[in-house]
View (cartoon, helix red, strand yellow):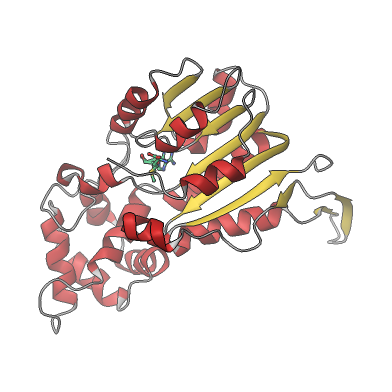
Amino acid sequence: MHVPVLAGPAIEWLNVRADGVYVDCTAGAGGHSALIAERLTTGRLVSLDCDLSAVALARERLKAFEHATVVHRNYSELAEVLAELNMGPVDGILIDAGLSSMQLDSAGRGFTFQQDGPLDMRMNPGIGPTAAEYLSAVDEAELARVLKEYGDVPRARTVAKAICSMRPMATTGDLVAAVRAAFPFVTGVPVEVRTVFQAVRIAVNEELDRLERGLTGAMDALAPGGRLVGITFHSGEDRVLKQALREASRPQRTLLPDGRTGTVTAPRMTLLTNKPVLPADEEIRANPRAQSAKLRAAERSVEGA
Ligand SMILES: C[S@@+](CC[C@H](N)C(=O)[O-])C[C@H]1O[C@@H](n2cnc3c(N)ncnc32)[C@H](O)[C@@H]1O
């Protein structure tokens, strides 16, 4: 079962009030959601996940909480979801980005290089091309960019070339074989395979673009004083989170057609964490998945537009 990462700090920074309205954008197995739900009396919790199997798990976990609802949606559509549910401004929003351990560990989903399975990697298996289809269609130079930017993969051009020369691919084993071909001097499976899988998965699910849209939607949805808490697991995600919060915490300027500054209004958000909050050694020992986690939090300003 998935263990919620940075659970204590997440709940603390969300500042959950018993009568507040909260959104957990990434329900997963419902770990963080349950911790929010058990603190509510007259409040409300809406939890989203784009993966139907996660929705089923979260519904099971939250079934005892009448004031909790789990919906099968992508958080990049947060504004639409909240409008459909007739929800007004929200007191706290959590985004615990990336994959759950259930997704990673399930060979049939194609996220793991440790077991052979279909090269799928879609978080929502009902939508969009699979990793195999993506890798069949992508241009070699674009693939090299994806590997570098989303996985910081060394020899990204060589890896992209190996993948393109060995396609079509059908299984995770095919992708592992291409990575091995790109590192012929390494015995066994090169360590780079982990970041190659990460980069392809991010591209297939358009994760960074959706995270950016989700953060914008979340900041728009917050009531004054409402909190946004983000947890990320790799540098690409953390860069998007950090930039979005930093940008929103600066005075908002409009530009005149001649390039001069027009109006200047107060920042929309106040940054609460100047440096990311990291898991304690104890948490990392108990749950190695927590090792790369970083939490950042911000509060919607009262004066900001
Ligand atoms: C790290 S897990 C969340 C675990 C959860 N906090 C818990 O305590 O069990 C991330 C979850 O977010 C979902 N997810 C990732 N990106 C998403 C998106 N753009 N929209 C909705 N759900 C997303 C994944 O399907 C996965 O179930």
